[in-house]
Image (tube, rainbow, N blue to C red; front, top):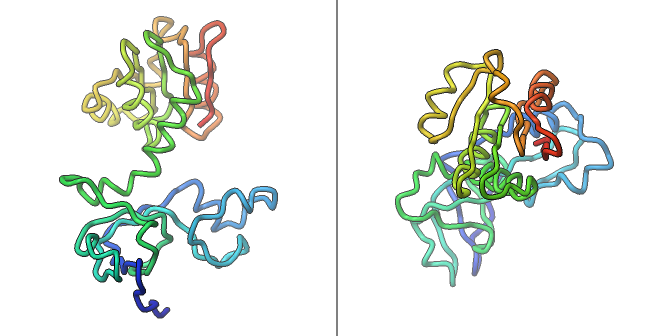
Length: 218
């Protein structure tokens, strides 16, 4: 498709990195988004409706190749934008966010996932000194564990069925346990966040919850 001419206050972004939401975008591809959710699940720059094909996605990082009048400070900067999968596009300068110096573009595509993780921690009402378990060490689960570990005196346990995730948990500074190796000492959690997306993970999350615990389905 043709790219519009850059006007005042607009920028041309050449995408260098993107990310696919395995759950959400697979649902869109299959045509599985219920009509009741069509409005809520629309992306800022989505084209078409949820009867595939449509232009969908919200994780794009690239550099500003052209900048219109007023947007010149962004020229050459790497930026993040909630734009669908496309190699170049023109948007208003307000729609992009310049990456902080030193932030790798490949990491910046995780911005929406990090926002989700922050919202999950807020929704859980995690408090100082709580014992938290996160079931499912995917992208969102790991980010939830990382964000939660920054709350004072919170004990974080990351649970998964894949033993290789233990190395990532160590880098994040949180404890790791294989689901099949959980013991009674791992239970009685104040807060449990389920991020695996499967029924077995949900059962594990519930088994870790203590009395009057908060269980968040992410």
